[in-house]
Length: 270
Length: 219
Image 1 (cartoon, each protein chain N blue to C red):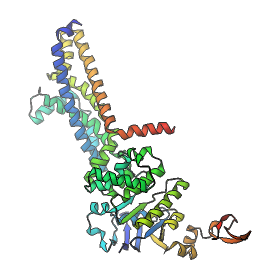
Image 2: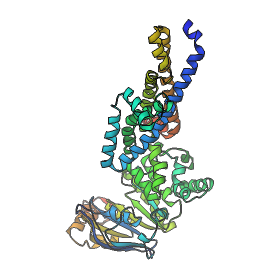
Image 3: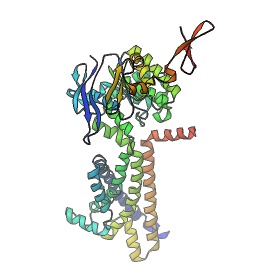
């Protein structure tokens, strides 16, 4: 069960290889974070799940069914999608944005809007914001709306395309915390694309680090990757040698204070 | 203004005829231009040819066009249909490029997100691309409206009645007041229809207004 990439490749007519022979399984209710620099094929891989991009070789399966057997439009409506910043419908009020997929599925307007209002609260927004247009919200609020919209039809699978990439660091941390809380309650199967290794470690149960051309540099839990980077590329990418990743404890008034490589305090051992 | 008082009924009748020639021409232009603009947007290579041909049509002089159309379609030279078609040709030529630009003005991030959420291609056109292209499209429709209203007067030269008849008749019989009435009413009609287009555009794009207030508030 879950999502399975089975030997997928994507080669463009001009010969550019976006993804080469990628295989990976995301168990149900778990989060897979695809992380890499631009050109690493991470977005391409995510888009194969809802057939926004078709692989040239291999197949993608959801709950053991090849997505190519499914109707594109029906498949996409069954998958929650959180776009990058700027992906809301600017001409639809916030409430109607959230209600988009239920409305496409033929749910009545009243019912869809009622669910949408509840979802706004769930992602930490005042339901009164539902009457506004996306352009009247801050970047962080817009991405909360995007998360609510992805959840509206109660999909099993969520695809998230650098959802918090364009918001400032403090708001980003807030949004990440919120997503962690939501996920522990909802248990969706998530594929998250990010270029931020800290975000990948924070949100991903499993992390795939990709090199240019969609080549897997390392797959593992965040702990496994930090503990044993597979090669210099991964070591460099996760910053294993960076001062803030090499922690030690010092004794301070009877308490064990954790400090990083620059002796700056990170926290206290519990 | 004695001439105007004496000929009021005739002037009102001509104003009405003018409107009935200009409005259908504008509506046809909009529909055809949106279709051509869409084609040009979807298939850029074919689009260059289509848009190039459309702008070429705009350079055809009006009088020969009014004579060629009846021959091609075997309709009477002096029929309203003849003039409406000629105006629609010019209107389409003016608007097709703008329509293609209007579709290009839609944010790709929005279109892709809509596609990924499960809008069908038809749904994307009607519920995403078309509404979001309205701001640019409306600016083009305004130009076509004003240009069509003034071009209607040319029909008087081949005997299709409109406010233009006041110009031809006034020049022939040397009635300055009649010419002036024709010119002023044509301009007034153009301004009024332009205002209607602007108002309709604003009513159809309420999100634009709120975006503007927000920008102001933020500044």
